[in-house]
Length: 344
Ligand code: SAH
Image 1 (cartoon, rainbow, N blue to C red):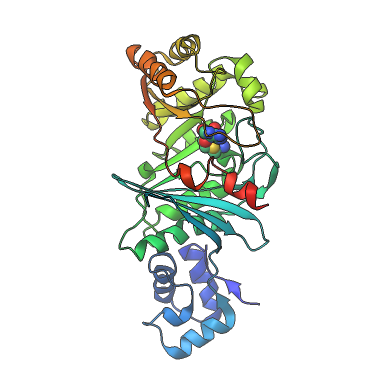
Image 2: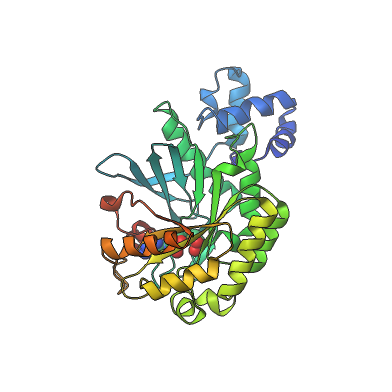
């Protein structure tokens, strides 16, 4: 069986190619083809002799990921990809074309163990972690598609299926790889990690002192309500999560974002807005209000436009910077994770 070269670091690739007695510059050349020039076979590598390409073909392959289904929104701005991994597991990756650049939303696990009550990705629990290679594959796959349109990925949001901080080591290996000049050379400032609040790993991430943007899924200002919506709150309480967010901001100098899904008649009253403003007062933070994407399997509803606006205005009047997340790609599938659930 051929060994897959996709996902190797330059050092790993260099070491591997020593088996064919190839010098380091060959590893650099091949890495550029794989990560930057969209090659999925050695035959495309025109600056490598036929002889050597044949040798590479006999020993290696370039296996990125398999596309099962592609859905484009009617305005053409959002594209959802349902991808299949080598063991048959399925994940979703989403490309969003914003006016400030192309952003890709990636998954870090197959399914999710967190059990949030409003989320489609966790309905069937956790299947497994993604490897750093599989996470990288999502990004390179979408970047290859964009290259064909003379475009590229400008930012990454780690907000797809799974809890990234529950797959810490693979996540960090991926982040290091995507930052390298032989891959996408992407600045850490262009990367956002969203977490449901795995407190010890927020501190661990802060210790690494990478200027990555942290987004914390808060969704409720009190422990009683948050525990009803997010079982992880039984382990890490609201106050501990916000304290970890504050520490992250202090250590990295990056303003933390708190995500707050607005769920009709659950967490969207003025009282909730007041509690939230008190919780975050004095912290250099943004609040990103997310109108709920209804999930067929749950009973939750989206609040009215007016209620959403009132909630945002209340926070802004109290000097808590709040924005309402623009919905993208609603017509290609309601909620994050729904595509995968429907297909299994
Ligand atoms: N596990 C991470 C990242 C994945 S979820 C986290 O919890 O942050 C990315 C964001 O989408 C989170 O804020 C999550 O709470 C939110 N989300 C999940 N289901 C949603 C739904 N039905 N409608 C709107 N946002 C949702």
